[in-house]
Length: 208
Image (tube, rainbow, N blue to C red; front, side):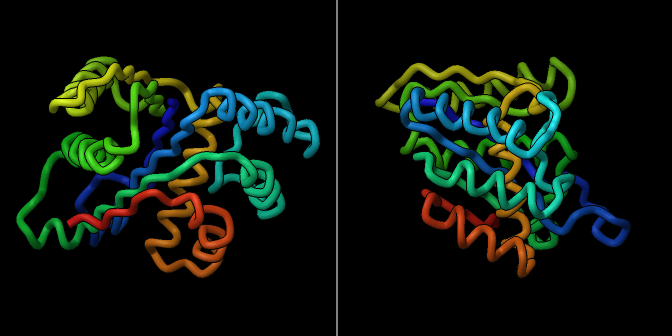
């Protein structure tokens, strides 16, 4: 089992000075590694079909509409499920939560992994590189503890990779970008989410 995780928005709480109103994290999960490889290969081939460089990174916010549609059409046939967690920062402030930016990121990740845990078994989990190595090691250790606690222990591996060199982290970027736009009630983003991802949705949590 393979899982790929990304985030959208910032972790700041200066909502009146440009901080995003929400912080969103998402996970794309493949139960079958061969299916994940087929999806990976399809994304790689798409670059040639679109006359893009072999090193081109599919990034939703940077891609033209035709590329976005082509990417979503390309990955649509593959079997993966998505888990979404949205953090409403205004409501969190109302509840007295004003953590450091690192803590909001780690709290959101812990909640996402908690809701996805029933769907994960012996998974290798890849996250986009974020922060320094110390932060990455601390987060990886805390997520492994979370996944392995309880009576049904499994073997999990958490690793950090650059999304520019991982096609399936680029898929996670598309998932979280569309989830964030749906959460913000953006019409175009909501329509794309409903068309391509709602059938793959395994869980969605709004926090708090």
